[in-house]
Length: 429
Image (spheres, rainbow, N blue to C red):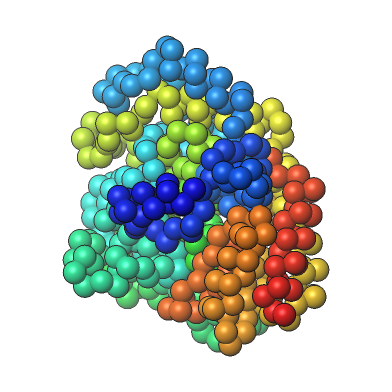
């Protein structure tokens, strides 16, 4: 193990903070290290692995596809991409009729922004602070979760202009010092002012995650998303929903926007679209927007409509629907949410538990929360639980994010909470 980790550190550009951990195989909800120790994966590897690890039906489908057809550029139609396009459009809310495939969530959001700019003839893009939309130039400029690319003056010059960030609907840490229920939806009023003062009818689009995950699993109050839709309609801006994380069943519905019955003009998904077996993403939109772009060579990659990706997505969606995994996400997610609320009652350090389906966040409120969050994350990993930690001082929050695979069982939820409980005791002793 140490030899491989040493090679990794010596030769690989370490863009991410990497743990000194070497996984050698995966099975279902677990990853295993070289000594055979199991780790319950409640991150689903950045929420991509919706079917868990080593799903044999998926593997067999990809083997079959590799024997048939693997690499065809987007210049040519294939059975796989036509079938996936039809399947996705049938799964999306009414009014979404066209689709383009990509490789990652970042490039899909980049294309969505280009779509909006081209269709509207230019204009500004509004997004929310704490939101995350990707690491390419346009998607990073839309990102309101300040990271190194935004903070470093040497590379921030790569970010395009014309992006404006509004206050998020973060009830636990309201930017306006208000309390839920008596705030009069001040964040929505501020968004209206942002429209008025940052371009009016020359706003091309507003892009948002229905539930910002990387910002700390921020669940908007009821009515907020409907209010956003109304503002976009009033000012003529397109509404883009970035469902790279929340899409494909993670929140207990196929797409998170279904909770409030709001249909965007452009809908982006990725990550769990292929269950992480092959990188892939999709941008879906209104017919008139898609047709306006049909003859414009504005965006594309060599592997944008990769047949192997399309087959992975088709098989993934087939299994999800057949096995009722969207419903499982809702049922097990509610069960896990209840268990986490009991954990909150036990530990004063837990300030909030929130989320929908199998996308949940545990926020910590104490003076030493940044150091504590890192310690807890490392302790849970040592004890066999993989999570994600969202902790930056400029965001002023520390949140353990859970978004396990859609196959998660109540027994898995019990095991995860038991490890959290034990780890909390260790960290507080």
